[in-house]
Length: 160
Image (cartoon, rainbow, N blue to C red; front, side, top):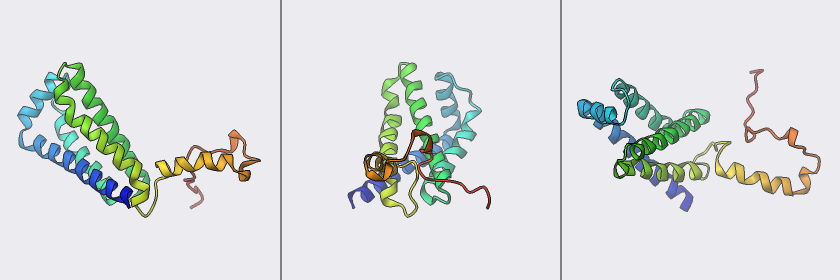
C-alpha cells in the first residue's frame, strides 16, 4: 500500500512540476527564451518543450500504452538530467534545484509504478527484481545467457 501512495503522490507532484513549467513557458515566453539563451540553447525550443512536457504527463498518467509510458519516463529522465547539468555547467547550481527535485520524483514514480498500475512495465523494478531469484532457483538449470531476452518478458508477436 505504501508503494501505491508513493507512486501516486510522486507522479502527481512530477506532473504538477511539468505542467507548471509548460504553463510558465507559454505565459512568459520572452523570459524563457532569454533564460534558455543564457544556458546556450536556441529560443525556438520553447514551443517544442511545451508540447513534449504536456504529452509526457499525458502518457504517464493515462498510460494508454505501457511502452509509450516507459518512453515518456525515459524522455523525462533525460530532460531533467540535462536541465540540471546545463544549470550547473552555467554556474547556476541553485537554479538546478527544480530539475533535481524532478529527478527524485521521477525515480520514486518509476520504481513504484508496477505496484500501483494494472499492467506492469516489463522494465520496472519489480520485474528486474524477479530475475536474480529465478536464476538462483532450480527452474533455471538449463538457462544460458543466450536464452535470456533483455525485454523483461515483454515479447511482441509479429504475427498479429
